[in-house]
Structure formats: C-alpha cells, structure tokens
Image (cartoon, rainbow, N blue to C red; front, side, top):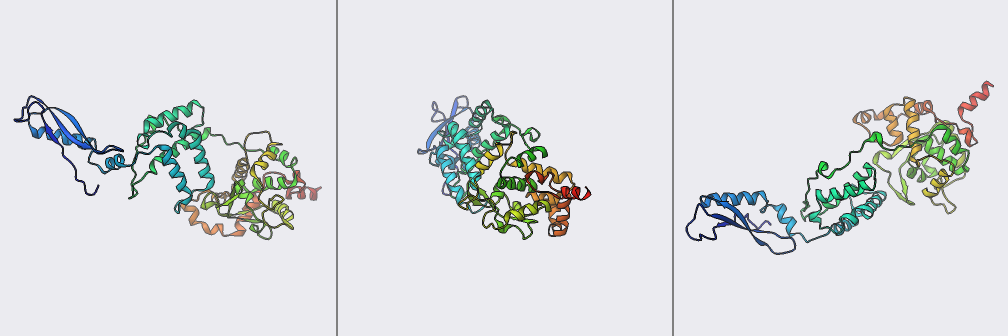
Amino acid sequence: MSRRVGQNGNVYQPAHLGKWNGQAPCYGRVYVDVQGADRQRKTVALGICRTPSIARNRLREFIEREKINSTQAYQQNTAPAKTFREQSEQWMDSLPKRTRKKVKPATIYSWQHALDRWILPNLGDSLLLDVGNKSLRQMIETMSKANLAPKTIVNVVAVVKMVVASAVTEEGDQIYPRTWNHDFVQLPIVDKDLQSRPTITKDELHTVLRSVKERDAVLFTLVAGTGLRIGECLAIQVSDFEPDCRVLNVNRSIWHGKIQDPKTTNAIRVIDIPEPLAKVLREYVTGKRGYLFQNRKGNPLDQRNLLDALHSTYKGEGGFHMFRRFRAAVIRKASVPEDLIKLWLGHARTLTDRYASQLRDDLTYRQEWCERAGLGFDLGYMGYKDSTQIELEKVA
C-alpha cells in the first residue's frame, strides 16, 4: 500500500469519443480492490456534465465517498477471505498466550460457550467482512426469541465484537473496523434493578448448617462469615491463616480444579475474621496441612459436589454467591466504613480509598470493626457457641 498512489480515474462519453458534448451522459472509470481476486475496473454513471472538469469532480467525489483510495478499503479487500468461524478459532487460540491483560480460564470457557451455543450457529459461515450491524441484529432477534436475559445477550454480543476486532494487519490496525449501532441492532439495555440477585436469610442459613456434615458446615460458615468467592474459598491452604485465624490472606483461586489468580488485583487481599468464627477455624485446622477443604487425595473439593450438598438442604434459588451477598448486607448494616467493605469483599477501590490506605494497615482498627459487625448468624446451629450465647449463659 505504501507504493500505491491515489487514483483519479478517467471520464469519457461513449457516443462522443472526440469533442466533449455538454448535453450527453458521461461515465467514469476506476479500479477497485476485490477480496480474493485481482483489481477490477468499475464504471460509474456520472450523468450529464457540461464540461470534462465537472465530470472529473463528480468522479473524484465518488472515489472519496466510497473510500476507494483509503488504506482501510485496501486492507479489507486484499485480506484473505476468512469466515467468522476461522477468525474465532484463531482468536481463541491466542487468548492463553496473552502477556498483557491475561484472560482467566473461566472467562475463556464462557466465551467459547457463547461461540458454540449462539454465535457460530448464526454467524460461523459468514465472511468476516460481512459481519456487521445487520447480521448482529438478526442474531440478537434469535436470542431474544429464545428468552435470553438482557445481560446474557449483551455478553454474547461482546464476544462477536471482540472476534471482529481481532482481525488486524501486520501493523496492528483493524482490518474490519466497525461502528456498532446499538439502537439499530436492538441491543437490550440491562436494568441492574431487575437482575436476579438471590441471597440467603439467617434462618435459611441456620437450616443449612444443622443439616450438613461438619466439613461442609465449616465451609458454608466461612463463606457466609467472610464473603469469600467460592473459588477463593476452595483454594485456601492452612498456611493462609495467621496463627490465631483472625486474619486470612487471599492470593489465589480455583476453577475446575486448577489454580489461577483471583478474579481481580483487588481480590488479592486480607480478610479479618470475627473471633467466634476464628475459634471454629482454629479447631478445624488443627492437625491439617495443605488445602483447608480437601478430598481423600489431598486435592481441592469439587465445586459441583458442594453445590449438590447445599441444594440437598436449601431449596431456594441461588448458588454460593448468595453467601457473599449475605455478608455484604451484614457489614453494611453495621455501618462498616466503605473502604473496609471493599477490602474484605475484594471490590475496586476509589482514589479516596487509596488515600486512606493506612487505615487498611491498621490491624486494631480493622478488627474492631470486624467484631462490631459480627457474623449476622448463630454458630450454635453447627455445634459451636458464639460470643452471644456465652454472654447469655453468664447472665443466666
């Protein structure tokens, strides 16, 4: 492309090849790039032009309007014809090799599922050049008829956009840049207030704790009392606790039995644990090494088996994330400072939070608030007495 200069084309009148006739129709000729073939000559009707100069101006306007001389048109039309399926395979293969903005295995899995379930059946055989707003709209209509949630549709559409954008030149420029029109494609708007966010009540949690075996009861208590994500909980090793089990260091996660980094950099954190729960943990970790929750082979527990154990006694909707929502509600009701809530839950920090980072390093300050917030449920239902029960027994 660097050796090519912009063409102006030429104008002519078929019936008057000699002297120009200002009352006769005229035409222009230009060469255009065609995908998968040699350049082809294109004839353009210019109408009646009084002079050759006017005809050349009209042809020049056409060339500019159609971007025939643009680098973008050259890149698109000279790139090898590739289907959306072929580009998606190339893109998926590149994800694990990223050195910048690495993609976690769980994310790669969900993107592949979106491709297999919805995208490739609708767009897989289309040329990448042809995947634009029209084809995206048709796919969204198909997903809407299948009653997919707005958030799910938005997530699937994001994968389509990433695949199209992944086709680049040797210079890293997009071959098929798109201006996506969300109004035209009828992309649904996600109303966060209408999204399903199931949680668990204190009474329901008590029912679960008295209905499962000790190991599972300790695990459910830990996620409900700390707000840990289930992958973070399954990756805990005994050595991640401070000696008194009042502080837990979170620095890894597990997905499908494989160790990976936590969800975000903010998820690498410390979590303060109320004393009643710390007492349970001190007893539970005694004599244990390796993973806190492990099978007979010493490997981390399987999340699916734990979910089956939960649903065997809990009949409501929701998975492990409802314990995290329960914990968030408990510490917010206790008016815990926002920076501590974000620390314990591993959420993103604001600039103000960073300015006040010395408070995060103040162990006494953190644990005072931790004890003030408490657990929000009764450990007595799993055979342990919490501080409230002890005080009631003293009064009696």
